[in-house]
Length: 123
Image 1 (cartoon, rainbow, N blue to C red):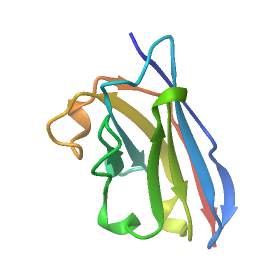
Image 2: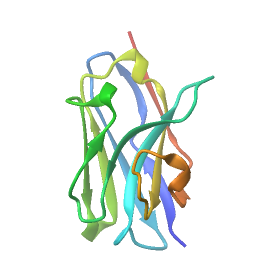
Image 3: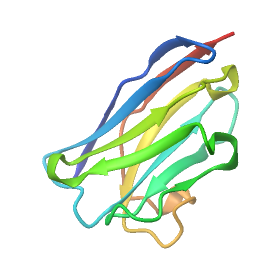
Image 4: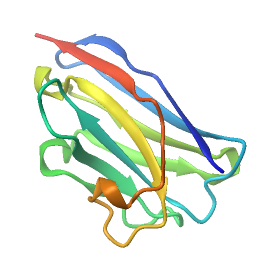
C-alpha cells in the first residue's frame, strides 16, 4: 500500500512560481508511473503532467506546456511539479496520482491518490 502526500501549494501572484512535491509514505514509487491532476471548483478533474517510473517520457497537458516541469527522484520516493509563469486559470486543487497505467492522461487508471494541495493564483 502506497500512501501519497502532496505539499507545496499556496497563494501566489500571476507570473510567480510554485513547486509541488509528491512523496510516498509507507511504500515506494519505484516501478510506478506518477501523474499530476487538478480540479477547479465546478470543473472536472483534468490531467496536468505525468512521468513514467523510469523518468522518461514526461508528458504535459497543452495548457501547461513550457511552464510546468515534472521530475522525479526515485531514491527519495518523490516527484516534483515545478510550476512557473502561473496564471489565474491554474488555480485548483492539485492531486498526485500513482499507478501502473497504459494511458498517463486518464485519471481513473491510477491506483493511489493524495489528498490534494490547493494552488491559488491571484491576478
